[in-house]
Image (cartoon, rainbow, N blue to C red; front, top):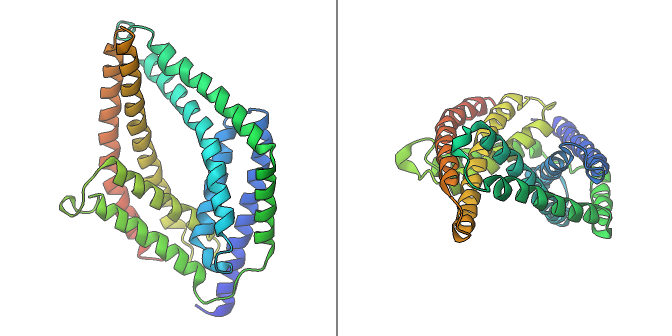
Amino acid sequence: MGTGRTRDGAEIVLAALRGYADELDAHADEVRRDEFDSVHQMRVSTRRLRSVLGSFRSLFPDGATDGVRAELRWLGTVLGNARDAEVLAERFRGMLDAQPPDLVRGPVRHRLVQANELAYRAAHTAAVAALDGPRYEALLASLGALLAAPPADGTGLVAAGIEKAYRRTRRAGTQAGLVKRDKGETTPERLHTVRKRAKALRYAAEAADATHPSPRKVGKAAKRLQTVLGEHQDSVVAQERLMAAADVARAAGEDTFTYGVLSAVERSAAGDHASRARTLLRTIRSAGRKL
């Protein structure tokens, strides 16, 4: 790959990053108005920016992305507090609505749905306060300054960033037993790591989609794996929250039968998602051969 083509690839990635930065601040106004799905969309923009800056840090001077990425992590945590409560309220409401009435016993809706709705309101208020504060404004200024500078000129920097993300995804999959069961242990923690690696690969591929050769296929395969393992992680988190809520309910003398029913549903779903992940990792390996 020649220097000119590499420089074009760097400019493509930089243009994508600038677009993501514009999306980030546009979503901020939507979050302030508490529009539907706005917290989720802004959190995705935050994570995408942080991930792509990490995958292609070599396009910038040494250490130039560190401070911005640290502040994006902070912002993602602030938004995540609201988003996690929002997701759990929606998830538990849907699960309870799907159960026969005789299986829903005690004040379970209060503990699983209303409690998370209240948590969302509090976390959303905190998120808006953060968006209206000086730290967020400083983040935007730092991000703008970083992306205003011309990208570095180096052979293969963009391709190397994608290749590294691809290798990290494959390595995590092997460690999680998704390639050969006797080569790794399929734990929730390791599957969550695979998900994070697949997400980084997806975002890197999408940012560099217009380069040649295009990483579009591996990006789409990574997105599918990320989605399935995201569903797995949601089931794992839901099980943890169900057990914690059951403990509180038991201490209050309430019927905990329904918590067990919902936990069994989530446990079964998590197993299905883990099985699907093995097939999807093979798809990534196939697509990656054409990078």
